[in-house]
Image (tube, rainbow, N blue to C red):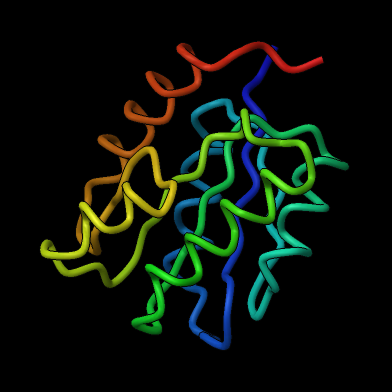
Length: 134
């Protein structure tokens, strides 16, 4: 069964080219991808993650609000009973913020320039260690 991944752009950032490239690379690698698009609220991301029964939520953030948006999304997933969903973050992420993102709930961080093959392999590894979804 294919791993289900939700790709979303939380916050006010309207640039989605990178998120679309990631969504396509994941789809081409055999993942089932749900792409939410831009300007999503963390609560909406969590609700759709539950509705779509995804294993991974991928946040694409270029706005500089990556720590607070990751924290809010992880909290919304917990509040929705989906604390087993893996959260990953990609985008314009300074190296100094990687630890803060992990503390906020990110299982992995992919700064701009991360090779797509590396991201795909990382998500395969993360999903193989995740509990099976019903």
